[in-house]
Length: 450
Image 1 (tube, rainbow, N blue to C red):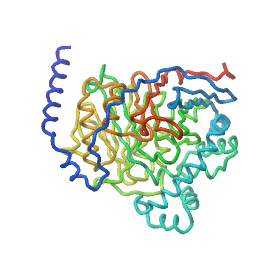
Image 2: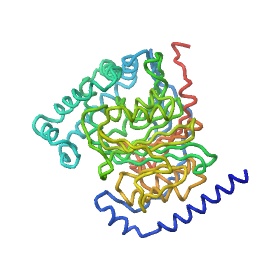
Image 3: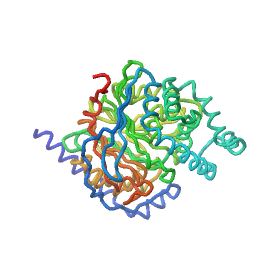
Image 4: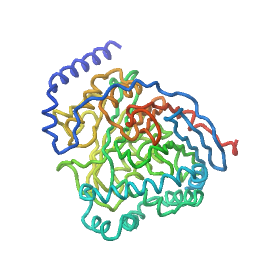
């Protein structure tokens, strides 16, 4: 105990020294990162109480149950699916959320189609793909993209999409196109993985802050889906945080105490490799990790060997091992980082013991430094609650949704952006969070099979 106390005091002293060494004016940071969408201003703390109310059952059908969790404007659909195959999952999904799916798809498609056309020159896409969008339309281009990647995608994913389409009576190709958009739009986001002396009680915590488009209406239909496989080919139970009809993974936790985070990288450097549109789309790389990886090593091995596509930063944390890794990710290159070799190593992105983190982009000095400063201010006693109150809100990250994972106790905290006709702040990081006890949710049994 004495040795641990001495070590902890040494770390705190080191961090105070680091904080003093890197305490410089924000104008310097803005000049350093003029190429990135820098914002050195700080937001207010999020003082909203966390909603820890129990889920409320709405409806049960074969292979599915629909609940709500949370209250008022911050209520979320909580969907439980059971199945022997992807079609079982999808048909139950489409049946229980038909109304939400049929509203979301045309609305989101219209918005993202126009946005992509308007910003085509900013999206880092191959010239041939840009020409295809301009000449043939976005729908044609995404269908062509699917022909390139379909050999890498698990057939059960397509079957799940077909099940949704059949049950909700929506066009299958519209659902499939929606899932191709992630490779194009990506999103600027933030993440961290913290463990050991960085956190209160040595818990393993992970942040996934999604700074994506809040004008597409996605936040009107937030869904947390809990998958319960009845066949080994579907892996193990996991939770996916998304929107009605969206089955790719951007945010989530698994029953094996693992979490995933992702950042789309626009401002890279020469340490990144090449990009390609041929490979497994990253939303299904992330889903595979949650659905099939038992350990951190499983996840890292899959990332190392999968056919990768675009420039990303990923993070995977494992509550069983009590650690996390950050991954520099491209088609031709992958690098794995822990707290000892974290990159980019710069005055605006220092290393911290028992921590990996990345704010908004790879080369984005003021946003990176702002996240670092907030982690440092809470270092040694960080909890999900303190992260919600004093890290994401003050660093202003997580416009569309924010998730905090307690991978030790299997608790997830989620907030969503303000929806249409709702009140309060727009950004998810300033809104009320809902607490989901995944010990309870993963253990739920279907009423038809008790």
